[in-house]
Image (cartoon, rainbow, N blue to C red; front, side, top):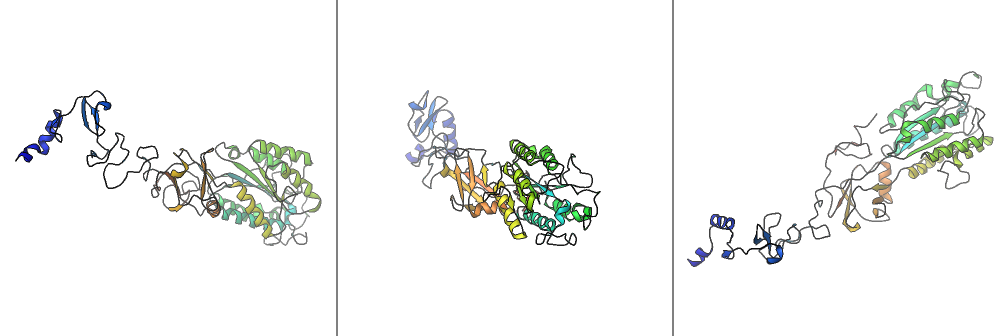
Length: 418
């Protein structure tokens, strides 16, 4: 009977609490003006010491202590994930940390002058556009393969030069400006009869009145520097020149060096892929030596490609230099140990050999080894990063043209494609 009288009903207890009575203690709640005047299990609210209340409504009266900000433990069932500083990590399991990955612009500056009709083996003119041994065919197939191997990590563009309207001192148009999803458009351009040199020069040198008898490389590179896409401040831009080396229009090697140095100063490093063609190698060297993407195995400064296999290897090497595996974060983690990364919804370990590493100085993650290779090839379509505990599953958002599946529909950049 006395016990029943000492334990008011829930309704009565609520009314008593509103009037300042502590039901659990059987008396009035002590007055206060600050938390310091209350016990550790209480806090000062409206002038009275009242039990601390956790975010879930529990009071911690079962022996655990709960801070007013919800940190610490509230019961005996386990611990609440924290951010390492005593408070609950609001992003733990609930928010993916944004990152800022931007595929680079890469413009393929492709020589289609009459000399590109010659075969690599014997330097004789090929039989036509279907002759697989010509410089044109080998370079065309190599470029198509390169784009297919790196379909979503590069904003590819194509500037083939010259055409019948592009002579010395004239601007050169880009068939396909750099942008997302351009692989199909570039493949279609390379397959068109009008773009390949046999359609413009004939099968021999008998046509001396129609372009592309000249090779206005200086004009092509000048036009490349003027493309709006190549000066996009939001992403890196590169140019890859594919040529057999001969430069027309009275251009000197010194002029070529000056121009590629200007391209580099404008933020457009330039690599050169050339075929060994005797006396024209000085032009290749002049372009490549100041372009900022010299052949690391050189000299020479340009990349040498005399067959399809070597060309593929060269292209892959250049692609790995321009496609970054560094992921800038937009939020700083409390500490490196709080970072979690999922690749295609599978946890990825912190590992300098095959996984990720973090650089606090730049606040960026870098994928290493096979993880980097998967990112570059486009095999990694989803990347999730969080602090405190593992990322949540893919959360649909708008496609932002970054080479990833942002809207979780198993398609990459489909809203950005040309």
